[in-house]
Length: 64
Image (cartoon, rainbow, N blue to C red; front, side):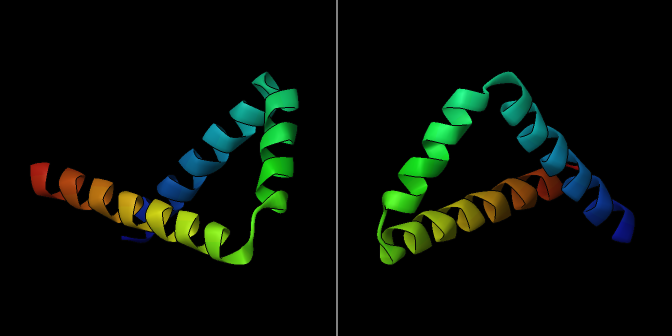
């Protein structure tokens, strides 16, 4: 379990780092758009991301 968690965190860092390295201007614009949103909008988007992540992990766990 611990190894899976560390691998997942590492993969998330790789993906986010790649986005910043490959598309720095787009990431800067995305961050500016995020900061311009209201708190409830950001909270709902975060909750949606959490639910999507849980669904993906559950689907992968059920497959293997």
